[in-house]
Image 1: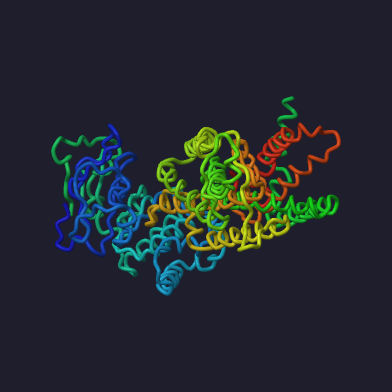
Image 2: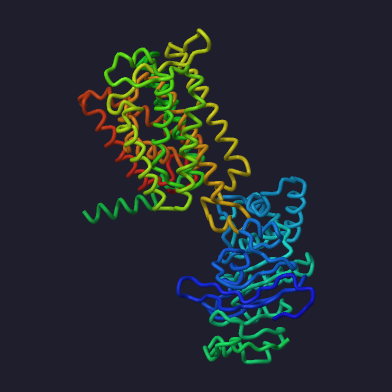
Length: 255
Length: 347
């Protein structure tokens, strides 16, 4: 468990079951204000489910989520208003809306038009490529541009915590680098806390402060990027060498 | 035969109609339908023109309101005719002439309300029923939603037919009054037409305000990806329920107009087939376009009424032929222009 005193999000013994499938089984993790944290692991480890559990989109059967010291039990629309935004896997931009309209969807519930305009300008400033094409339909953009749009749309909610689910999925290697650079920039420039689920381990370890390694619904390692690179934990997890024990799942700390 | 099927498939996949830009086709369709309407009306004279345009106004209210649900929000409802019937029956029950009913053996009490007192109740009851039904339907999506809306249309028809104490069943309800402002009754066809067109204009205005607002943008987003919009803090079920109720209220208005215009209704006006024709109009005009629904309704009315004048078609077969032609038209549209005449989306 993350032991810092300024923890802004804390998951304690979270269990998510889809019928007989135990997607998460006693997951505990924490993230501090301003941190960028990655959740790594092979397919089916439960990485995306962690984000969905935070957002109220997965059936949590046990455990607690605390956000800024308060227990988070709300529905998704209330969680968004608490300052947490989720950018789902697969970009999922609205192709029949323009780029500007897509961005506005990120905070359409705001009554304050001037605040909406301010956020729009701020996001377009962060993503110049979106500014140039803001009147175009989202369907006319490349995959990488759509991913930028998806992240930008998430930022329109001015989140304190941004949850990114596989933001580089299906993108060309050169675009992957651009997306990671932008995530790093958001973390530094906008001071948004970021939790990122990612398959591209090499790339993501370059931009995060810490990482959790997940296997079969349990956290098996927690540490800094350096500590993860020094161990064989990822190789073991991806080759199926880890056998989580009954208590604690064989979790190791490398912080 | 396989060559023919192959040729049709290729024509459908890459045909000029499918590839034609929306703006071009919109212009062509508008000129063709309006030209057809003007020609037909000049040929048939003023009296027929007034009748035809009144039918158009009622169907257009139905089509535009259904397009809010089917086209803009992506909920393929085949139960819209139920709300149309609720509006019509509410008007008939509240406003039909009580003295006329006393002459009937199966007499039912009627409050004998004036048209404008009954009209808001027609709209409100259609909305209330939609609210109750919508709370349940909100749990369903895609194919299941189609099936449950189908079930609603059947249930509504069964009520109209079997709740005889209220609806007089298959006998229908007579002597439904026309709108009246004090002593000025809109008895004349031209007066009623103007009133119906004002109602249509109001419905179009409301729909336009909805679809161009941020509410409308959320509907478009729901149509595209309901789950994606939910993670941005939108309560999708509330938006779907709101548009469903609004659309039903407009259908209730159309039903009230029909009842008043024809002065008689029976359950046959609200059978499931009418719902399918309505869907055909919306698809013909195009999904998620108000102008398309107006064009689709006009084309439908012209086709329906125009078939009466085909010399080789006996009058008793006009009804059936209408269904066949619309069925064939629907198949051709799916093959060559699945987004309809001026639609933004495919079904």
